Image (cartoon, rainbow, N blue to C red; front, side):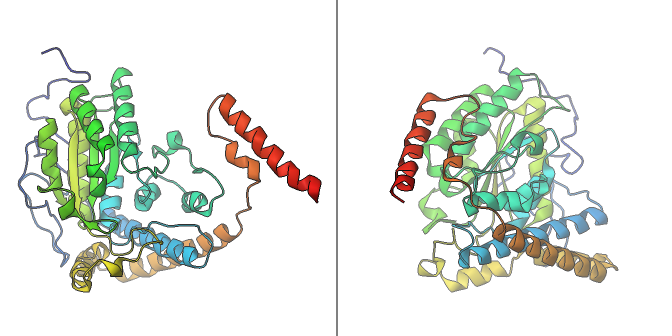
Length: 386
């Protein structure tokens, strides 16, 4: 077999990172990796360890609370008519913060349209996230500066973009211990899309430095995961020839450890990894959805007891004597964020009609310019009548 792009042997005993030194790319079984129980107690796992300081846990708590506050405020703004649409991430904060904090500054993330918590960990301003849902631009942040690609609405398309980017990293020589890896987000429903299967095929064949991070939140709009697959999602990786790992997606420490290990595995030449973070969408698919029409209230209540923020709060209440002060400070910061989001969204100026054609292509594009001219003529016809 010819050498695979980016492939190099792993040194004996080489570490996969500070928080996950024992995983060697082998499947770890059907039970999700868990390092923090719903009661907020640390537990050990034979392959993964979250060797994090108390100060880091305090930082995760802050991340989780701010991500949720942004999400609930955006939902309220949509209900008030200030946003056209909003995809809530309520209940998925640990999956997003844990995976986002696992990325290095050299890594690049490709989100769907729901990774609001990841965006905050990558330094994307909250108002930049909301501009697209306000309808004033196509997505206002710089993906090169942030290492966080623009939101992708087409289900599963970002996995192909991410795989191509990872292949580019190989060809640029940006792999190895200090190199770059790609984290591609997708949902459980997206695993039924052909684009995702194609991404898996290419990533495996090219041994690309990419981790596919599936937030299995239980529902693909109104269809349960049981209608997407007959086996656990992480086991789908087997058929494409790369490892899969299942993690408790409401455990920020477990997600951090597993994602760091997977990224290190990919970065060091081990090829792609599929991470299935088992979590739950507590709210609607988007603000145009009514989940009460297809979900059992008892199911929602059972998952509410596994709230990702509650378990970190329980840990800190037990281990951090200064937690009350931290909680109050984070709450104040969350309210300040909410106020900035409210005032910032409402003060966003409406774009001129022809602004929609700006920043679509990097270079002049004949078809786009023709559409711009036709639109301008259409608008001018109303001006002449008036």
